[in-house]
Image (tube, rainbow, N blue to C red; front, top):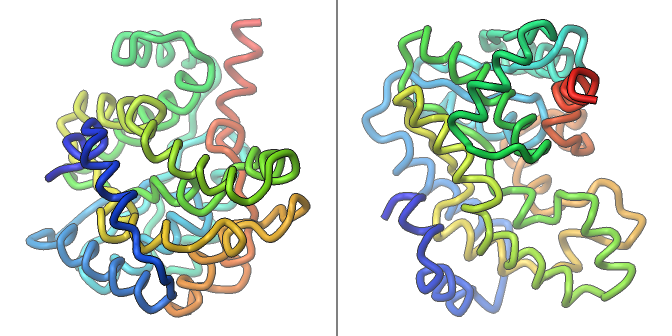
Length: 276
């Protein structure tokens, strides 16, 4: 079953929830990730990674280097955006080639129109994320690559979003865990539908190792208390950070706080300027 089939099938997602193990461990999480990686990389000799330099894309890229001979990293953002700077520093740690796509603010109206034609939405968040992905995937296509890996899913399962702090403060840990499941159940409409539409536009295959069913079950076996420690916990995502340490991911990356793609890339603010 591919990602589209899984995340558009509420019955299958409900089965995942019902079959989540009662016990959790980093060892079981790692075993599930290795299974996902084996299945994702089978037969692939070269691939691209959507790379922000954050823990998720860094971890995916680092683990791919053991499986795929030729890996190239791609990051899109406006001139002097933190995304490009962070990705460049992280790529040096990996000793991998980084292709930077600088989005000229003058070209934004044209790019915005192209993305709108694909997504059929004017929602600012969807457009700004979609535009960043469009710029990266367009460049990946030019490099004659087909398989594109990403870190999608980690934030939903491990409380990566800042809103989880508010939920914890107002409603408690049980509500946090339920919101993780809500985000998984709604991931297609909120994220994957957009991502697949843009990838399909370029005839590219998007691969998300964190979204393997076994990995989802093991990730969701961790209670909210182990993902976000308190309403003041700005780091969050502790299980994936512990897993990254097993692969010797540098401490600077392990302890890096999340910043939303649309702001990290500088695109959201640039669009706001031109659209008012």
